[in-house]
Image 1 (cartoon, rainbow, N blue to C red):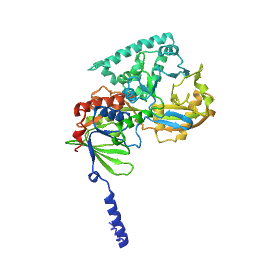
Image 2: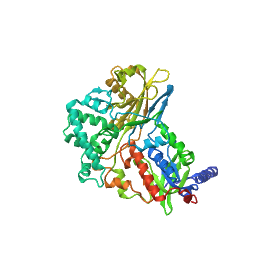
Image 3: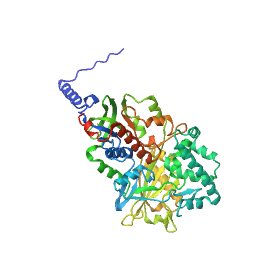
Image 4: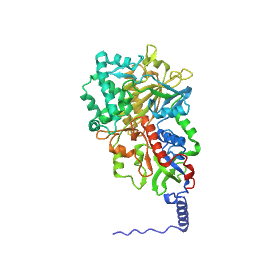
Length: 500
């Protein structure tokens, strides 16, 4: 065996090394040496997306004190409105709030102006042909697209879906409905013996909402998601001026003193008196500590796996988290010559939004006067790509230049002659697990999902993954969890926590 002999360093080098060691020890930030905790509150809300912001809104209404912790330098999660020169704007994530979403009531309470469509369905591409929604009602559009005979079949099927949805409102849910979690929704749809064009319309309508294919989710959850479209359907709403105005209004209402940005939570520790949360200030790398009587984890599903819990979550909790599936979104904004509007104008009316599918996803008009810049030199088209195409675009294995080539080819295929009118692209990537979904074998109605809707000691879970695949899931979870907390803590409880 060869013996390695290391020479001792020079006195000067040893002195420098000692100074560096002392500096390192003085500035190391371990949980045990973290700075003093901030004065305690009733509830810590971890996550500043829609679910966290709405949770804080409801807590403030009830007089429950809170502090909201957000790891990013901005609030809102996927709610963001991009602003471009000339007054052009477009959503980079959440495009619409469907009727029944509690976030609409929050927006109204904050006196935000809303616009909405009377129609639930959108123009769509079926069998390679654009079917523009230029009719006055959903029924007129569907009959025009499907033809009288197939429309009658669709109506009968949709009537059955209404009965299924009523069954899902029952408690307990009938076993026959719960059994459908073992069947892929795509296969279940095939078994309904619907005409091919009816199935294509259902697929074109639903897949953008779940961000995944119909084959990847369980039948019972596909049925549950159809609530947006069944019968007269739910009207889509949008905040005038951009959905980001909802985030800004919520932040102003909640108060700057209650909001902590750049605060990445790392540890969630349950104590005899409540919860201690430890976090890294991403701007200074300092470890911070927060105490509260309870904590709401209003963060994406995958982020739960990045936290250290004491005590650990149960094995059932981890099973519930790890066996959920997801949908994907990717956003592309394309600036165009105003002459491009002719491609989606039918009888003087815009056919947007357009469910194109494939690489293009859903096409929306950018916001402003008919999506056109104030100087009239440019217009904006907003592509919300979903499913496998979005998953591929979000992967870091290919360049955005390659994404641009593919999108331009797809756009040219849909609108022959549009490519020379393209001025430029801007892309927005998301985490692959952006949207909650329940795969075959799972359901939002099963015992594992019920587990995530119940408190775990002093911890509460909020987010779309506890309720549905839509933004309504985020707001519904906020209403649920804030109600649980108010019932437990009582209103006007701030004074009881100020001593900690």
